[in-house]
Structures are given as structure tokens and as C-alpha cells.
Image (cartoon, rainbow, N blue to C red; front, side, top):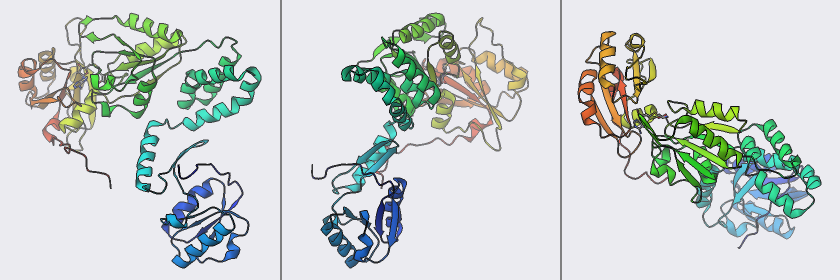
Length: 443
Ligand code: SAH
């Protein structure tokens, strides 16, 4: 290791920034953000270094930059001249700022671009509210010391609490509840672990359509409870040693009844587990996430809902069909074609009104009834329509036509994958999107 990382306290200290261009501005900003008062100058004079804790040079005359470097080093003041490693006694790292958590990345000056790329990757995996969690631990640290004088006990407690419900609450921005949960855990002599259930939308199937939050939770879960619709690509993103429980439901042959799933989630949380309940698409769109959330609330289990890309959005995006369009649709309606008793009981008069798009979930087996109902209510059988199977995945297939043709051919065309029916003038506006074979390398 050529450079030793350290974090400087610059509160109220003077920092010299020599130069006045854009680069100098960019270097001055984080120094000021760390509380330094910035002394600016365009030309170097030795007196500028009096009382200075740190010196930075950029966008200034070359001789001045060299003089600054020599004078600062002679006086033992750390100095950085941008893009001139030979004149530097310290390096300005790429910074990930989740105050009070700070991550500094350096490549020893060898590849600043690589450092910035690493910073982006780290930014993406760290929860935005990580700072709030660290601040919570900081606020509680005196109380923790008092309650748990033994170092090992304290460490075990903190490890549990910083990976448990108080942390989840803090990361969700629920500061007061987080503090209460933290204090409760501390006051509990046995510190019985409390679980947490995340109802997480897994999106349409492609792993890179997961949200960053879903990805993080999959990496931290003790148990993953998943449906038939959740793809292997998504499950592959989970922590290797997380237990997996399949509660898949195929239409009309429910493997595990909903009340048993609810009881399972409550039971796992009571064992202190961090549970990720993964649901295809979004948990609150035809996913019965509302019922599970209600059951958890009633049992007093801490939980949160993480949205996912619902099938209608994924299918529309990948097939190039806009769901709304200034000329063709001012509303979009999500409806289900699922029936309890085999009769499609929808408000056809409302659905047949012009100027809207219908996205029909679970609509393949009742396609003919949908057509009959809509046409009776006044919609033209020649209205553009499409069926999109496995939308949002590389296996997507599209059957495009009219309401009449799609209703006639849809069941025979289907290969049994999840499929969405879109009806409306927007289907005629499709501009099939093409993804580049390989993404261009970032500049
Ligand atoms: N919560 C899910 C919907 C569950 S209901 C969501 O938000 O997407 C199941 C229905 O969703 C399926 O019958 C099908 O109509 C639709 N669906 C789910 N995934 C799909 C996909 N990848 N492509 C097309 N339709 C899909």
C-alpha cells in the first residue's frame, strides 16, 4: 500500500485552494462541505500557507503550482496538485458520502477513472439512508456501553441490532420507530431477536429489472418465500445460504392457501428471521400483498413493502406499446380476468369507454368473455389488441391484432407462460424497441 488512508477533521481549519477554474471549484466543494474555510488565490505567494492545514492546486500557472508544492512540503503541509502525482504528498479520493459514513476510494493516482467507476458501484449497493443508521448507533452508543459493559456482549448485541428490525426501520427513514426498537432491544435482558418481513416485488423476471432495494434485501435475507412467477434469474441474486420456501400458486390449483402463507410469514418473523416474501411484478398489483401486509400488521410483525415493475409496465416497455398517448389514450386501467365462479364480472360499460388502455392480468382463459362483454358495451371488435407472454424477459412473445382476432387465436397461441392482454388504440402505436447487443462502454 503506497498511500495510507486517513480521515481529516477540517472543521474551522484553513485550506488553501490555488487556481480558479472549474477543476479548482470541484476540489474546493467537498473541502468546504467538510467544514474547512477555503482560502482562494490565483497566484502563489509563500505567505498564503500561513496557518493552513491542507493545500490544493489546480487550474493555475505551472510555476506557481510547482512553487506551492515545494513550499508546502518543506513546511510539512499536505499538498495535492491535480493531475500531477509527482507534486502531491496526498491523494484526493473518490468519495461516497453517507454522512457520517464516508467511503474514500483511491487507486494511488494510477486510474482515477477506475476509482470513479468503483464509487458508482458502491453507491448503487449502499442504502441511501445508511448514514441515518450510523447516526442512530452513534446516538445510542453511550446507552449501549452502560447497559452492556462486556465488550463481547456489546459487539454481539450491535451486530444483531444493526442487521435487525431497528436497522430496517432506520434504513426505511422511520427514525423514531428505529430508536424505539433499538431501545427496546437494549432493555430486553435476553435480547430476543425480532424478525422483519419485506414484501418485495420481483419484477417481471429479468434480474436487472429488480430495484436496488430488492437486490440488497435478497443479499441479506435469512429466508425467501417465493411464488411460481418469480424467475430463477431473480432467485439467483439471493444470498447463497438463505433458506427458500416455495409457495407457488398455479391458477385454480392453489398449492398453499393464502392463510397458510400468512401464518408462515408470521411464524418465521417470530423466530427472529429476516424474511423476504418475493412476489412477481409488484406486490400490490393483483399480488395479494395487501392481505399479507394486513396479516403481519395484525400479528404485530414489523414489515415493509418494496415495489416492483408490474407486468403491464414491463410488457408495454418491451413490446414498444405506450400505455398512454396524447392522441390515443388518456387513461390506463389494470383489470383482472380471473374469476371465482367462471363468470367474468367486470364493469364493461366503463371499460369500453373510448380513450383508454386496458391491461388485463390473468386474462387468457376468459379472453372470449372479455371480447363479448366489451363489444356488447359498445367497443369495436376491430380495436387494436395484443397478448404479451413473458414480458420483461428474453423469452417475450407478442401476438398483435384486433380484439376479435386476439380473442379468437389467443388460447391456441399461448404456451402457458404468464401473459398480459393489452386493448386500445395505443397497441397500433407500437414501436418495437431494440436493445443494443452490448451496451456501449461508458466514456
Ligand atoms: N403482481 C404481479 C401480477 C400477478 S397476477 C404483477 O404486478 O405483475 C399474475 C398475472 O400477471 C399473470 O396471469 C399475467 O397476466 C401477469 N404477468 C405476470 N408476469 C408477467 C410477464 N412476465 N409477462 C406477461 N404477463 C405477466
